[in-house]
Length: 120
Image (cartoon, rainbow, N blue to C red):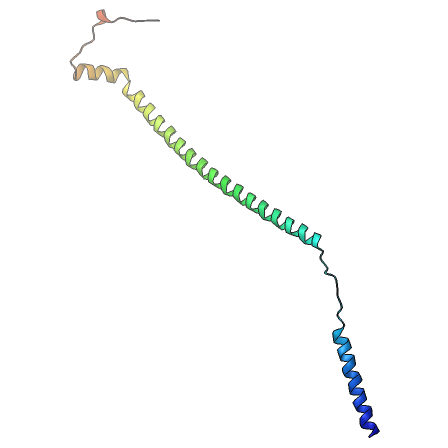
């Protein structure tokens, strides 16, 4: 019987130790302080805003670059049209052509006595 009483006593002591162990709460401080959390939050917000700023500027640059290319193509087209028109002016203002049209279509003739040269 002594043995049973001894075993019972040991079980009670072990139960008591378990209770003592489980009731002991070890409080550890967090590894990150509140100030560090605030700094990390501010850093994250700054990084996010900087990212938005960079992406916005990149989109604006791309849009303006596209507009520049469109305007350059339009300028090249206008230059080509102007060159063609200048060539037509040169061809149409040929004095021999003007004389031929005046004689054939309009029935005019060149009278050297009525020609007046104006100089400024």
